[in-house]
Length: 406
Image (cartoon, helix red, strand yellow):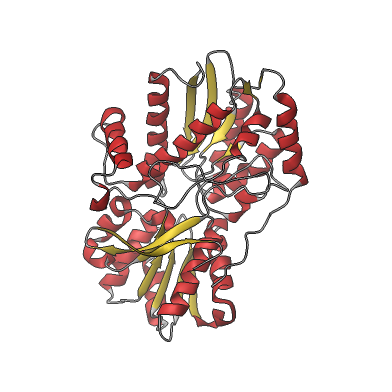
């Protein structure tokens, strides 16, 4: 089955950025945030608040740059990684990013987390021509080089992921009656639009659609509404805290639908364990990273290297938390992008290098998944593989899927 090609392909603005960077190759150059000894990188992350389970990503990224600096930095320059807590609150993100850009004068923003927080700084960073690289959200808007040539995503985009779930439901669930729980912001809406696209003429199979706000204490009432609707399929578009609540509440009220969970909450340590493994059995998601709880990776060289890094730079951290894997892989890609800039550490060249990967292998991505970008393609990872909870880990099944297949 075919999935529509991703939107936002084609870009005169992106081409202008790439052309500018090529013009700079003839001379050594550098922009704000770069000295002879330092590269200053900015970041925001929710170390507090309802999204705080994602805070380990920022801690992991800090540890990665510590490793890089211990090894001499990048082309002789140490990385000064400045991260701020925004609590997953867009106004705080705006304040923090303005400080990072205008006062700290960072070279770029890297892995700023969350769809709503990134949306709040999206236009500002592009107006200032400050790279907003490998953002920690899969919204499809991060792949729009025509209108936002200074912003690039990292993970598979939410629309494609949702389309894959929709097509899997239609192919595998007889007489599907679907209930949807959605985080009420651009992140949730992106999944929702992709899901409806995947269902196509079968969109009427959604018999109940409920939302929640970040400020809601629980999603218990929403889950009760979904059960009462008679739904036998549950598409759970929730951040980790609320995803765990929904899994637990569904079990408490005896609702056992076929359960699809968005990848952003596909975390054994942060979601399945607090929800209760007995309650999570059979939940389906899409993965693109090796999961540290999966025993098949025990002797995998990439995972052995990751564990050694964790034990050295994050001693005592939870080795079962897949968000550390996420931060590690994104940092590896950013590290490679900076290395490829060579002596021309300009923002335009940084974007040119980010848009020049061809089947590049990042350690700890699943086999068959690589990084490819271009001046008209700002989606670095374009594939995932379906998996279900079995015991206390994920069991992958089927082929690696991309935007063309499901």
